[in-house]
Length: 263
Length: 255
Image 1 (spheres, helix red, strand yellow):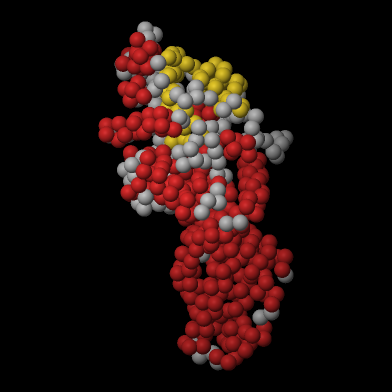
Image 2 (spheres, helix red, strand yellow):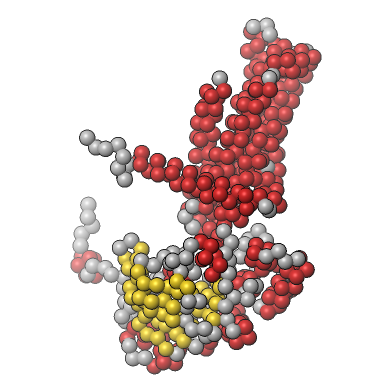
């Protein structure tokens, strides 16, 4: 997956300007950044949901902006994505959720679908939960089911959107282990978008840190941690104030307090 | 003089909206053949929109029929022609009240359910997830619901009419003492096939309009609690107004 000199803005505000990211085959690439740096927007660009204004996004060597709907769908069948909240279809059981892509895209007999689904659910440790409804799952379980669904077609590329948000430490560890397993056992190229520095450092091969619409640092997690660049240090060490300011831009404090209420 | 059409004014916004809905309809129609290949999904939605609305449709049909019986009897008695009560009630139901009241109830019961269901699917990323799985949500989610509503409406209208006529009969014959033979034979003699056709065409038109608005509003709802709520409200308002507008146009066309 290669992102090159990408520009994208919403209204007049540039979200990305001159963004370059490369996720290499067979590796886990972490994309980090403070909230509001457009990490989710980046994922929408990578999956072709929106098109960049300038620059290119290429997945498996194919440029996304040039593809028509059929081409885009063909490409998407080679990738999987794990959504922040799982995005399970709420009117189907766990089993049917995992079977959904198979039923939509293939004419496989039920017996085979059952075997594939149970295998994938077993891989995420939820074979026993196959007949529960999504509403009966905890957040961590829902994400694991979504992961089983994302790998049901054995994708070459898996994209994780904030996989650790809102999870307890045990579930976090489980997800981190699964991401590593998917990568090592199945050779799936992985892109993990998150701001969870500790968890990412333990699993990622390459990392990118985004801020102000561009990559401010890249390298292995250890290299990032040793970086002397202010904004990188602030993020890695979780300092409240720094280049990313604690205060939202505002007029001067004292004059504003002394100012009379406008009538 | 200011031009009638500028980008900001209400006329432009309304026209633009009609255009957007029409394009959405074309997109739906383009996917209909693919959706028909999986009748199971459509049957599920006929059940959702139709069978689940049955109780309210039957209850309201009964009351509307009973009111027709009372009002009709009161009116016809003044001309000494109570025997024509069956004709008045059945024509009123078949041509007008059946399709219109059913469509209004459908908008409130099934239309809102469709909009909020689809809107919540949007808000919880389910539609996006389908896109990422290379499944077109219009084909998989929208078209079966649209067709389900389109098929359910004429069926509901038929049920409404039958129950309504029974209600009118209950009041007219059992309570007010109109002769049962006259009630039914006059009905049989006066109601033409054209009257039935008019009602069926109306119900199909209302079914298309109400289902289209419901799925459109849901699909385009802002992905927040407030957005889904607003979309649901818009579904009821727009469906009701459009139903009455189409009713006028079709009635004028049939006369």
